[in-house]
Amino acid sequence: MKVLADWQNFYVIVGSSAGALIGLQFVLITLIAQIPTSGSEEAGNAFATPTVIHFGSVLLLAGIAAAPWKTLLPLTISWGVLGGFGVVYTTIVIGRMRRQDAYRPEFEDWLFHAWLPLAAYACLLGSAASLARSVDWVLFAIAGSGMLLLFVGIHNAWDAATYHVFVVNRRRLQERPRMDRTA
Image (cartoon, rainbow, N blue to C red; front, side):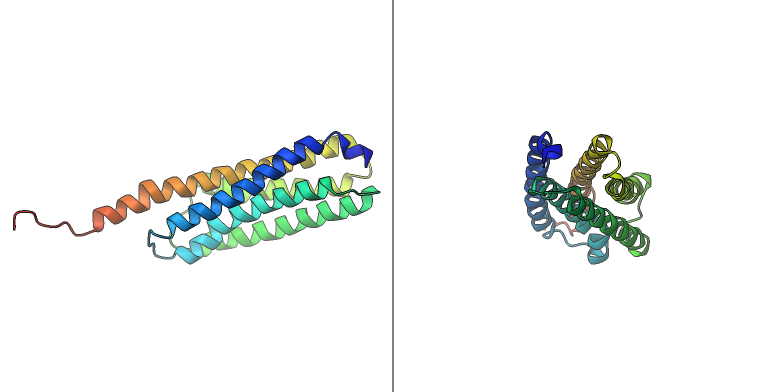
């Protein structure tokens, strides 16, 4: 479709980045698995899984843009479904954040795990609904939604890594019984 021809390089870069970051997230989770924590399953459902979902959404967003559509209708429906799914999923994540007791979320957690993803998915949903009326600005809004999800995922993955390295691991090392060298 001619209207998306100028966007191909953008979506190749964004989609490839999202795919690579999904792989890195799997490596991160594997490394973090060596650090036992209490309530980690509930916290993982609230904080780690959504990061992979956001990266996957960006990858899907790029794949949808790169598909050889003949008309705007299937593109509109696909992006709309992705945006709607994201809004529902982020609402579920907000509930999980409230219910988990492994970690007390702070303002930054609410911003990056709840409000920014919700805004990105809502923008994607609204943009998809407007795509047939005004293509040019809507394509920028959709691209912005993807970039926001990509940056949210990067922030959240980094935040999880640093939290486990500097907080959880340090706490675990401090709680480990020290060997008495004088004996």
